[in-house]
Amino acid sequence: MGEENKELKEALFYKRKNAFEECGDAGCDAASAYAEDYKKFLDASKTEREAVIAAIALAEKQGFRSYDFGDKLEVGGKYYFNNRGKSIYFFRIGTEPVENGVFISAAHIDSPRLDLKQNPLYEDSGMGFFKTHYYGGVKKYQWTAIPLALHGVVTKTDGTKVSVVIGEDESDPVLYINDLLPHLAREQMSKTLAQGITGEQLNILLGTKPIDNKSGDSAIKLNLMKLLNEKYGFTEEDFQSAELCGVPAYKARDIGLDRSLIGAYGHDDRVCAYAALTALFHTTDEKKTVVTILADKEEIGSEGTSGMQTMLFLDLLDEIASAFGANIHKLRRNSKCLSADVNAAFDPNFAEPYERSNSSYLNGGVCLTKYTGSGGKSGTNDASSEYVAYVRNIFDQNGVVWQSGELGKVDAGGGGTVAKYIAKYNIETVDLGVPVISMHAPYEVISKLDLYMTYKAFHSFNK
Ligand code: MN
Ligand code: MN
Figure 1 (cartoon, rainbow, N blue to C red):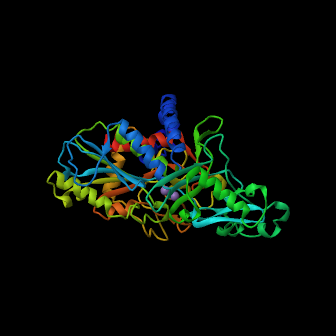
Figure 2: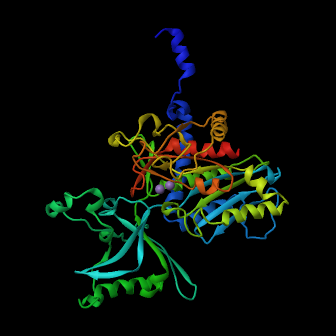
Figure 3: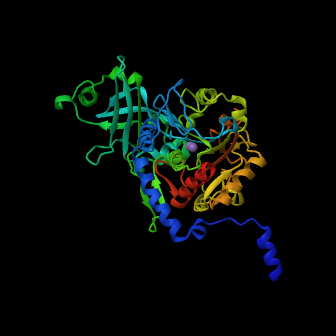
């Protein structure tokens, strides 16, 4: 190729960026420093309820305060609406009329896990267990033979609520799910990965000691129930109104000899939640009204009062509009949203379901996704050409290293996000997020630079 054509190639071809090349040592240092605080947030946020508490603690330090319907809203005010302790909406009112639109960032704070059934406690063959019903898309075999922690709440009929965390403190015991030894697994090993461990085998091992050391009918179960009652004050019937779950007992840690990656439970999607939240804190443009949504229930279809499909989001926009005498319809039409969720990073060990030119890559920066969906874009928001161009331009103007990525090959599978539940209110919305290795596994992996670029993406959107 002649020199002239090399220049032509340079000018015409799309070149995938590499965040190391773009950021250099200074960028890596900034990303590593940012990652330290992110890991602390993750360790404190293993359920959506814990993420709400951790987010409020951070936000109050930044001057955000609790808002309820009907409260007075002021220009420059920083507010949060805590939705039942399970999802949360942060907003800061700008000086420009809200009719000109608000800038929304949305992410979800629920992650795949093993929920306890409502009647979970039993004993069998000298062992006490909790029965579980998995939450979200899990590969069941990944949840056996690893240390698990128990998190959640138990609400009693008098309304008192107790928070449970077992297995996080170094001095705590951890819990466990049994698997079959390979010596006897000839039949199990011949099954598919989907069938090798079934949902009904995901029973959490709790102990073996009978009450008063005397074996007998339900003596192990009684001892376990006594231990729970002594520590938390609830009885077996109170499980009926409990939300308890088994989650990996691992802490977030650096991965790799070069420490360029972070391993943790629940990057999906607390990584985007943390990036969106901290970008909101650092927003300096006083003109814009900025909203950050941390939603629940995304992993099971954004259902319920805490999922993105609830009317609450519309109610809050309505409150903001009426507080300033604005037309809600204009407010919505002029608003813009970055709907953040993780994407599948290309993995050479599992190359088959990926399409190389349209996958996201580790250290390629924040991943912009025009459409998600499955089976012919079904169930996607599919952002408009105009809006994708608007967002691209913001990123380019602000040194955000970004890439585009679809989840995988056409018809290889797919998935959805909260984007369409925001777009349905006539709000321009596009998906973006952090590429993840081993998404939905008990320990997921992301890159520190991609995390930092996602923070920068939100920040440049809000400024
Ligand atoms: Mn997600
Ligand atoms: Mn997910």
